[in-house]
Image 1 (cartoon, rainbow, N blue to C red):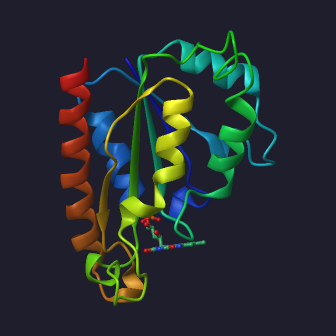
Image 2 (image 1 turned 90 degrees about the vertical axis):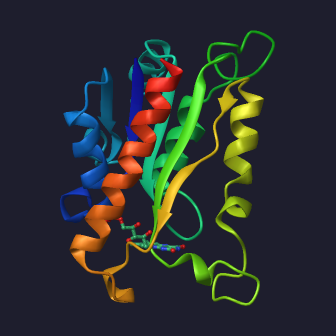
Length: 181
Ligand SMILES: Cc1cc2nc3c(=O)[nH]c(=O)nc-3n(C[C@H](O)[C@H](O)[C@H](O)COP(=O)(O)O)c2cc1C
């Protein structure tokens, strides 16, 4: 039913994204998780395999940690190589038309820092505009991102805090996926 494109370069050390994936796998949802960093440790993406995976599902979730106000590089590479001409766009490029596109990510710093006078100046939604337009260009249904702040242990959050917020995040995502089914 839903394809989860997991993009995390150090998933074995992850707290937030690992908790979200565990919760999804323990749910009753029918999901296919593709951990693209472990599938492609040398960043040689199998475009055909990824496009076939997209064709199998009506909903695609992009699960990743927020890196430099954006997605991890391997996920950007995934878009660059998989969303090809006449597949995702172009006169015959309607293979993704009508599919749901859900960004789901975790943000290290607190929300209070994502304000005009805060360290990060902009709201998170201002950083996700290019992804939103990518979805529109591929004729997909962009669903508002699901994310939460405060995953950085360096900022003083405890592991238990982070896991608890990640479980709440996962439940929001599961509810969204169930509603789309
Ligand atoms: C390379 C790198 C870049 C990051 N950039 C940001 C950033 O721009 N903004 C932010 O709030 N957190 C940033 N972080 C923190 C990550 O978002 C945070 O480590 C992640 O959400 C934790 O998820 P995990 O427990 O699944 O690893 C960055 C972390 C790394 C390693």
